[in-house]
Amino acid sequence: MTLMRNTLATAAVLGALAAAPYAHAADPCKLEISGNDLMQYDKPELSAPATCKQITVTLHHTGKLPREAMGHNWVLVNAADLTAVATAGMGAGLANDYVATGDKRVLAHTTTIGGGESTSVTFATSILKKGGAYEYLCTFPGHNALMHGIFKFG
Ligand code: ZN
Image (cartoon, rainbow, N blue to C red):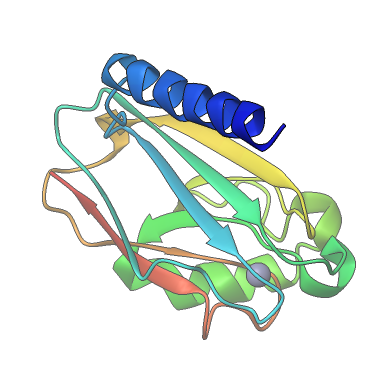
């Protein structure tokens, strides 16, 4: 019986190894970031090459708290607009994902999610300048002080 289990385990490992060469390389235009219950993103920086025609950012909430208490989103802005966008978003409320309606300073944003959820946004890179100074933040009230990072394009 022990021998049989070992054989099965070996077969499973070999199967995984055989599949590996066929796995696609990670798409540099598809980015992932996570937020947790401690009001933190897991990455201080995201970057995509200028060859991307569009970029998809997927946000995961790895915590357990509901979005009303510890909601997270991912909002892309010009670095200079970060504080103003956070302030405007605070008043917009959860129903608007803490993004002020029609705020032209918001280049892209996801919905606001709670623990265990994921969301993504896809945007055309025609709105970005190669080498521009961009940052991302969570606009849930009070979160941007900790939850922000640098976005590099190009
Ligand atoms: Zn947040």
